[in-house]
Image (cartoon, rainbow, N blue to C red; front, side, top):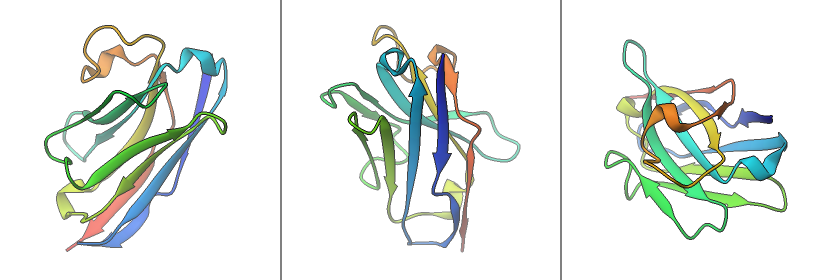
Amino acid sequence: QVQLVESGGGLVQAGGSLRLSCAASGRTFSATVMGWLRQAPGKEREFVAAINWSGGNIYYADSVKGRFTISRDNAKNTVYLQMNSLKPEDTAVYYCAARPTTGGSWYRIGSYDYWGQGTQVTVSS
C-alpha cells in the first residue's frame, strides 16, 4: 500500500500562485508514476499532470500547460505541483495519485491505484 497526503491548498486570487505537495509513505516503490488530478463541483474528476520516477517523462492537461509545473523529490518521497497564473476555472479539489507502472495512458483516471484525501484550491475572480 502507498499512503498519500496532500497539502498546500487554499484560497487565492486570479493570477496568483499556489504550490501543492504530496508526501508518499509505505510501499513507495509502487509509486512509479505520480500524478495530480482534480474535481470541480458538479464535474468529473480530470487529469492535471503526471511524472515518472526519474522525472524524465511528464505529461500535462492542455488546460494547465505553461502554467503548472509538476516535479518530484524522491529522497523526500514527495511530488509537487506549482500552479501559476491561476484562473477561477482551476477551482477544484486536487488529488494526488500514484500508479505502479508506466504502461497505458497516464491520463486515464482509473489507472491510478492509490489516492490522497484531496486538498481544496479556490481561485477567486
